[in-house]
Length: 413
Picture 1 (cartoon, rainbow, N blue to C red):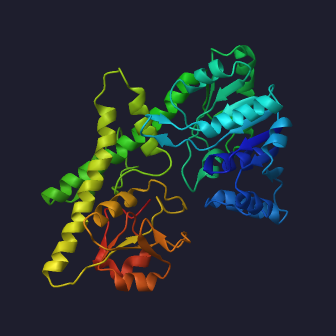
Picture 2: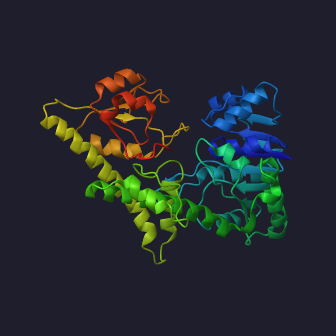
């Protein structure tokens, strides 16, 4: 099939590569540098499997019918399916995802190719696809939530936990779109490394599919928050959090996974999805969802106070103007994303106390980050900083372990 993918972030590029194994795919972006990199078979994002697939394609070891382009108009005009994977940032003033980029793509598709099926992969509020049908009655929309990890997006598409495609019952093309939903699910399964028969596939209403995405990510945020609050309790009471978590995890209903304490949940999805779900609860009784959102802020407050108390201890011991080092801004290992990373919250709170902060982040070219110096010289960074704050441990810090403050108990992502 001829497929156009709008957006080459983690979601869009991983889907474009997956689908390009068996289809002609135009990968559309508005950033020339990203399109130029893809034209050279180089990944503009950090993702091990995407980098491997593109590298193999460059060497002629793998066939990928992938065409990066800045010309969305031409790509959408020729497409049978347009996959929309543009960013939707949460707007705290409106309590709503900013969906303007999704709608820009929709309006261009309707202008050049109104018969194309548009599959929204961007995360949206519950009920959004229904509003699209009302606003654009000639549009053919599906919603398909993604469940990907940063840095492992293509791997997760190759080994999907489930495939979900939502059909808006409000659409004038509902019957036609139900058939299209099965076809799109089959395309995703065709590209996967797993046998298609082993992948749970659900075709449901679009509104329920939207809810699945928000509730799934908010549960993950809940789990992060739970073990972080366990860790806070253990730390305040002088207990061994690792032993407690290990004992709790042996309960098979809980499991020994997704339980490593951190500075809080962050990244592309969990913070904004939890806030959007809370906004969707307007006029619906709840306590837990709001607590999840508030818990993340409380955890950052606690961690920052722990760091600040160490700074004051050094001052009391005679160290003049101690420097706090932030080791890596990225949200997790194997990722180049530091948008909404939890360590930024710690950094801002520490700086608010007038404490100087230096950042070590080799993926950041700018000399400063929110007014703090950025360095690529790890040796000098370790020498200058009196305390080094690390959301995740790295063996690079082994020689200065006595300076490091982290809550990474199990030293795994």
